[in-house]
Image 1 (tube, one colour):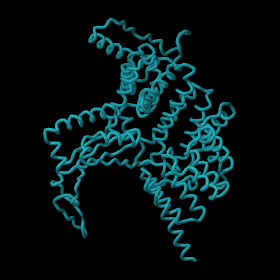
Image 2 (spheres, rainbow over the protein chains, first blue to last red):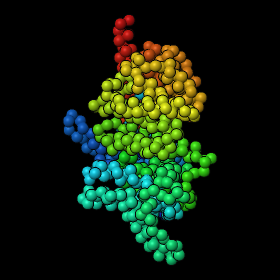
Image 3 (cartoon, one colour):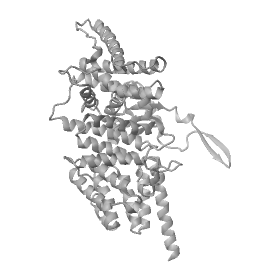
Image 4 (spheres, rainbow over the protein chains, first blue to last red):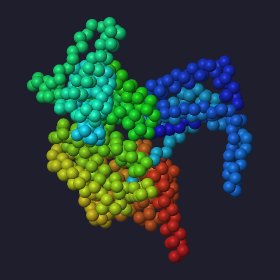
Length: 120
Length: 421
């Protein structure tokens, strides 16, 4: 099963990861990434730029309305993801629990929709 | 046979024999053997269409693979400065082996057991089986499972390392372990089949071929173990299920339930073969879960119209299956048969006994079945709620579309009844 681990962050957590303490956290991330690569579970991963660089796009009356900044003023923002192919959601949750940022702000684990299906 | 497709077919048939011959001599270097065998298959695929197929293609492949393996082992040896004689394989490895040597059939079987070794995760067992037995390339396997090639390459190389590290000898498992090890092999083939079968047609052609591949390997296994009734049962189950492939999706890709399928589109030859296989298996002991599932598929296949389905027989088979393999999924399926034989209320009563069962992972199927029964019982409001819950729970796009349409239908029935009242 494929899952997306969605990593949320806020100005404070971003601060932590770019501080001195952050170097140790980054090493932890590198170790987990290496493990997931080795196990053949990692399908992809990306980190997103600061939420302030976001452009929000909505088409209204046939014309796109583009605004600077994220959709909602939220405490936490979507900051990046891991795309995994693993045995079960329990395994995906276990990886999320080890992800260093989970100590500061939450991660969401969600199954990826499959284009295959069983007739009923 | 210089047509590329025929050549590919021949190469893939010979794949396990080539690797088997190498691995029997160099079990400790299984990973190198596997690479060498793949390289030989590639050489055949490149050279044969132009130069023609050699007189003894199997010997040709073993000779090429053996040369690659020796080069690899020698350079490895040089690296490690280790004194180990590397003996070239005799070309005769492919013709009839001496009496004291295990046959090539045993090699293929040993290889299958090795690929489905319990030290490997199911995902690795699947990948290794498709490469080592199926002769598929890493790129082909990756595209069939919709994962990046690098990910699949990593899975394959890791599983080969695991096998090397656990120093599994290249021989058939002990007689006492055989039944359990064979169950693992059958499960891997079953998973490969399902991965291919559940893919809808059209955009998912690559994955659809996995079902054919699972059938091909199951056939190979059935030739090796003709007396095993569960091997025959699994092959029959695959054939009888795959026979419905043209009818199970509408041209727009949406799923067509069994009761609404155009039975004229079912593959009559596959059904005939499946029924013959399962009938023969059932007449011999012992009875197993694959045979029973195949028998159920056969009863469906024998009905010319949905209303001709012998649900009593299906119910009896599910009762047997539940005794053999008690789990909530089987109960769920038995509940459908109970509903068809004794009415939806009886089915719903049985469903209630497994509601909230922690082993029931397919919650969306539970809700879908309940929705179906509630709708048969005339409770369209309840049916609509169940179908909506099922639609939210499934992780399959075509299933969600189907369940949402059933939910809409239930609401339409409700409105119609209210209007009439």
